[in-house]
Length: 446
Image (cartoon, rainbow, N blue to C red; front, side, top):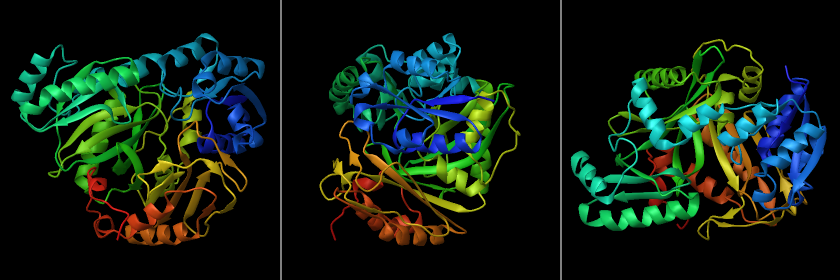
């Protein structure tokens, strides 16, 4: 087992990792930018090293500074959390070259699954259902036009290096393809420095359902059931739940088996997520794989009583998994609390928290790094907390969430708490009748 782990991240996920490390008797090193000097992860780690100025490019993405921090503190492993360098093959490789264990996927695995076109080809080879579309990258607009005609409109153009909804365009008819092709490529080039595009059949009334997997160094994998992540705005998840209200026992078995098959085919080591799109007929298609811990991992932990961060660390240290698949015993919902104004197109709202009261009670969990007097910097993701409620049934979890949201006071800034309160009472959400298009018709107005 590791003696000391450096956490190459910030905010609530850094706190989350520190907590598990303390329970496992492992020393921790926090790294922080100058903007995060007063963050809780800096206070609660055993050691802390400043790695640069506020900008991510000069701190949390500065590989040399993070490796130097690990070396001067004698850390024997690095946990990257999610975001930043968690799916960076170069960083994984550099850690290995410096004799530091990267608690995440290998460089080869990240390369194989990080590029969406190559990931799709890999999954096809594994026999996992994939969305009909181009075989690899599109070489020209003429090829795009030909494939669109073959698979039938509507189609979706996607950037191979995409993320966060950038470089994606839905095309409903041939007349709109040229404009979509050009704008998607320009956006992808600007955002990722790569304008490579591929095409897929557009799935109508889609649900975004992901399967949590864990694999070990022997090539054995298991799944920990599903999470429904369909409530999204501009391809960013807002809330998640498990089990999915759309799921049936038969579909869960099929999707779970497919996810394990995918993980074992690539001999995946660590915690990862196989993400699927599921259509209204319950056909499911591989979308992508995240080779890291997910923001929404707590709901899985709650319904099966399983510490995913602990499992990540154990697998990275060479321990074997049980090989048992897990099914949810309870129902859990997560609401992402962002420093954003839901009444003003979710505009970011950085600033000082002047007063804070966190909800509590049976079945209520809050993962956060903020406190009264904390100043939310404008440089990073706007998520400041995750509120998780767990109960015997979905309706009970919703009722508990409403009660917890009403108890959650954050003064001094705008937050998405009012949005979540409204969502929890929305008739379609309460019925479990939602898709990834839900937010297109949602309004904060009466």
